[in-house]
Length: 419
Image (cartoon, rainbow, N blue to C red; front, side, top):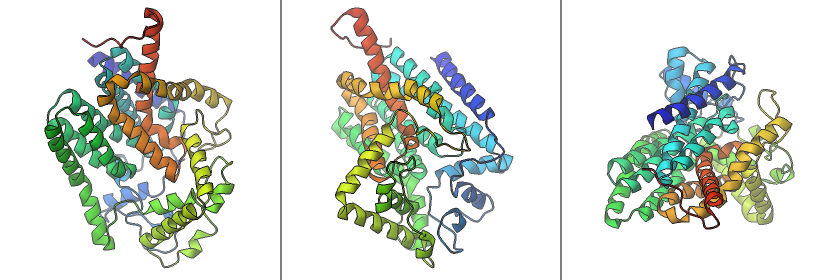
């Protein structure tokens, strides 16, 4: 198995490094607002903060809770060692993305006891174009996909090999995931509930869920305590969340549905927020978005339906892209033959794997809750990347099962077990 894991990792890393080498790594084409500035603020001893200039908000007061700190914390050691070296950051993202393919193999093996499923899913992730693509830009997706698959792996491993170390590791890693992507805060109770349901011993399951939840809160709570000391209010979600909700849920967004972006920032938002704190601005955005949703439920339903299609579409919008590299017909065809095939086989894989429901409930809960939260708020095709390992695993199960069915006759049989 070690040789297989090494092959998967090296294949994934080679493809990602080749892609990164084709880019101009002297510049940050993507420009994820605030993450680099927050990293330098930490390095220079000023604490976690970013200037207001990274946003459209007027004023000079820094933003202290605008984004989750996870991505900036990862940048800190890289910037400290190499300076603001984008190539070094991208290589780190390539390593994390390649390790994600490795954990896809391990998770697929634990879910189905099937070497063919594990290998096919892992190689699928290693060569998945959208996974390779985003390692070339300073976005948190390559980090998010990695920090989410780790707790899922340990939760599933805890069902196969009951021992406190597995839920404990899952809890610690869920806390890390919550510091990296806000959706993980909401995901925690759902994943732990799925673990409890899948565990055959309710008494031990209760203790293990309590352990995992407690450790997750232990990791995440310093961020909440720090926010309370600064704002004198309970701040759990990043303050940019209000703006993210609003720009995808307002009258202007309805008019933008047929455009590649699909969102609308509003008319001259900077004038509205003179003299307001980041919490006040977030609160205004949140109330405006909720007011639109409640007063125009039909339009909101149309927006949500449009976001569902955007989230699960087989290929990116043509004519848009980063750094002037527009998506063309070649990107469309490659996406159709990779992501499109995997997404198409996902639901058949879920249906065919129903006998394994105790284990598969955990990744399925993640897929359902994560995608629902995203579709309800704001969705782009990029946001689904953290779900692709699980999509790939179920797609691989469907493919292997159908191949065995074709070889052995019309009565489907279980995928062969690993010795």
